[in-house]
Length: 396
Image 1 (cartoon, rainbow, N blue to C red):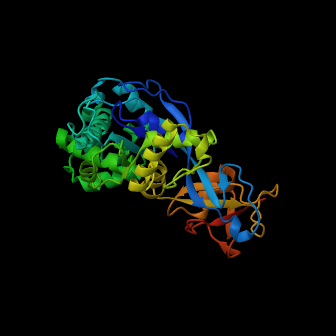
Image 2 (image 1 turned 90 degrees about the vertical axis):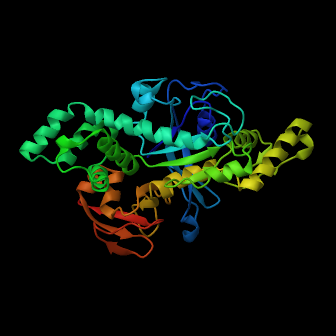
Image 3 (image 1 turned 120 degrees about the vertical axis):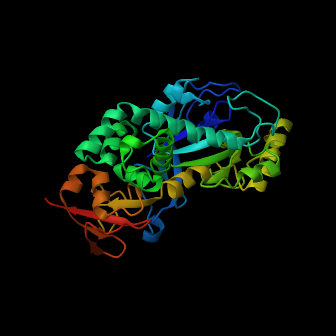
């Protein structure tokens, strides 16, 4: 799973990325700091089943801390987007090309309204962040429309005269964006397009692309810089129709992770507070900064960064966590590792889908699954539940 961290310049995207991944990224208070995309791994939390078994687990593709399994997700931080990026303005062409593989977007906005549409600093609350939401929707829709438009007159004529399936033609044009046919079909149903594709006008196309975007590249909003945003301004942005919104303080999250790494505090991502280890060793500046962060975390319920990631995984993409094992009695792999792997998989996926996710050979040779908790045999069409522990039986 790949989550794109998107937004205009100078809103804290790279800080959010670094806070979530602890991966290095150039951070500065001016537009277009990020030129090349940054990739890193973050983690979402899930309850680890090893406590049910009463023995420690041996994670391979994830981590476990005090019964909390940390499941990896990949993040992509790309160059800031400015209006008319779809026409090549700013670093638009590169930005949009970098996002082709993303499964979902976290749109980081400056909730304080202190950066204009191109990322330049302006007085606080002088810019409406809702403009940033609308312009990003527009840019992605125009980007998709530009791809579909190429050769569309010829394609639509063929579809009309030869009875070709229009959704397949659109899918072929958007292949590089990783958009499934099901998303295109859903978008066509919702867009109420003219029956004859040769009669589709610009507004028809934009309506269709907007719906394709919603179905194929879901997006949520990180209300960044929430600590400096006036409460009434933050409240206004907290209920954007059609979006999950989370107040975030990415600078605070990054500072806390660095302080924890340096041994100054005890802090776990997603927590609403932290503990100072030895207050007497802190200087006056450190104490003041930590007090400021603690007050805002109490007010907002944490920094919001981990909350954003988990909303993207569990709500936006509707994923669940499943634990594949080989021995359903001991919950181990062939080396005796207890609950070695944790997989994020789409809700509604089947036991056979899980087999294919682990390895193509397992899917091709699938015979049955075994629910390790109940010891019951499950068929290829068994719908996986969140937290399932499944053993896959294959042909020898």
